[in-house]
Length: 208
Image 1: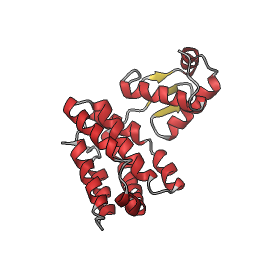
Image 2: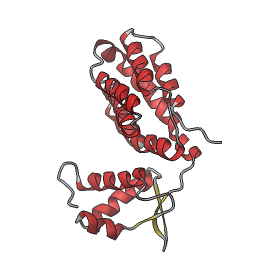
Image 3: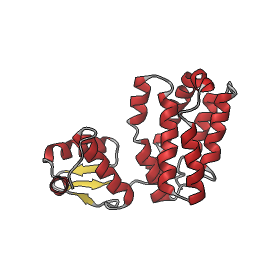
Image 4: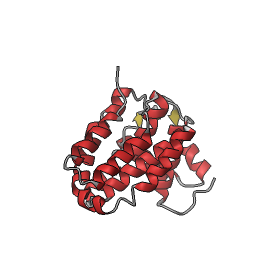
């Protein structure tokens, strides 16, 4: 497999590894061999090493001397930890973006429509993609690069997918919950920040 030139090489390799973890190609506790990935993708080991280092900072993988790199055994508690941070960031984003989204929610609406279709088809992959897409556009609408960079650094898409695929975390309706948020922006709900925060916290996996 040759990596296409779209994003940086490191980003493409990172996405390849993440997809492998989310899809179950590499299971929790399983070793990820740097050299094998380099050969498979026909790249040098340097960008593979950089991608693995980035994923270690996201706590998706762990390394140990003489043991190599392995997929972390993440528990519900591990996955749950990022949600209060994410909820706080999205509350700030919602409040900063409130006026802009009250005037124009067109960036959010396609994701809501796609979520209705995904709900009907029980398509978990599409539910993750469009749920994360909706929230990314919400954060983008705040027009704050530091906020967006911090939010992206939480690995939202990966942790959402892992919550669903590894722990069976479900929501009754992805589409209706997000349509309710669009309606709140449109009516200039003064509680939009707390509403978004509560929505995000309600999506968190629950540890026993």
